[in-house]
Length: 96
Image 1: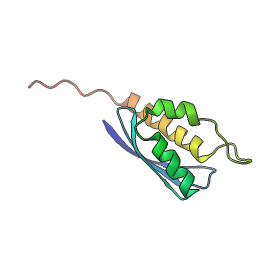
Image 2: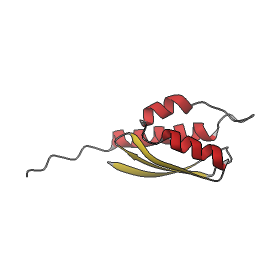
Image 3: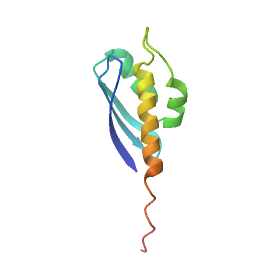
Image 4: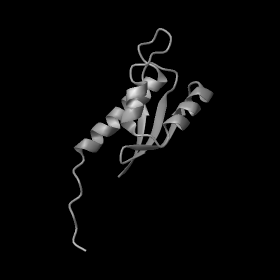
């Protein structure tokens, strides 16, 4: 199941992260505002990887004196997506 998700960031320069995840794999990420080149690089490096792997790599990173960062916000967004996926019941099998 593909989930297109918009995450409103908090405490960082980027205002929003748009994420497309299918079966726990990141298909696309785009950041609104923030350090354009760095965020494009993070998005490209994350593409095609498991959300859980990205969460493990980026969770808890800070930026300057802030207690979060754009990569940490991405990890939080992906955690939220995975939590949503766990709550969605599987589709019942349909006879052919």
